[in-house]
Image 1 (cartoon, one colour):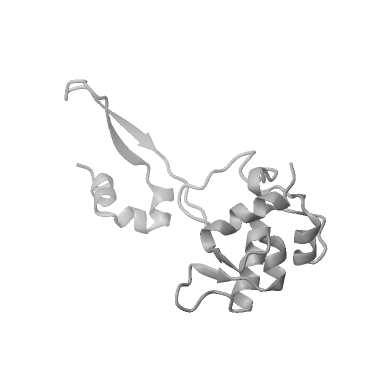
Image 2 (spheres, one colour; image 1 turned 30 degrees about the horizontal axis):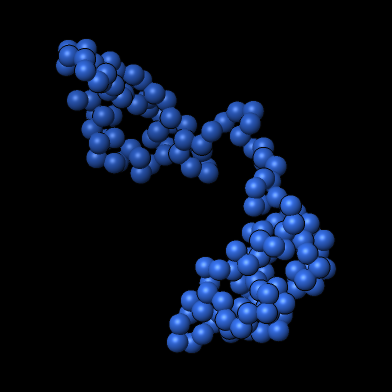
Length: 148
């Protein structure tokens, strides 16, 4: 076993990204079902950057994808628009964050059971007039405020 392979196995080389830039790593590759005599050795050069070990470099590394799914802003109902302060569009993730910020900021969790939310007047408007709501129900109760 080479010194590099021993350093990889012990974890020394992985703890020091500068060492990764200097030495190519020898990696044993065994094909499943092949005899032990047919073992290939591949030499791999790992890139260590200031951000971390093995970060991708290339044309598409720094591009952001457009928001999709629950992170894409969608039109919201007038009740939810009033709750969030007048925004016409909002991602579902942001709506949930704003509801939780309101709950935490106004101390609306039941002191005996933190999973239960005691609704004030603002929350009753968006939760269909309910006095108490379970924390797992919040995202489901916000669904009608995002028309399709």
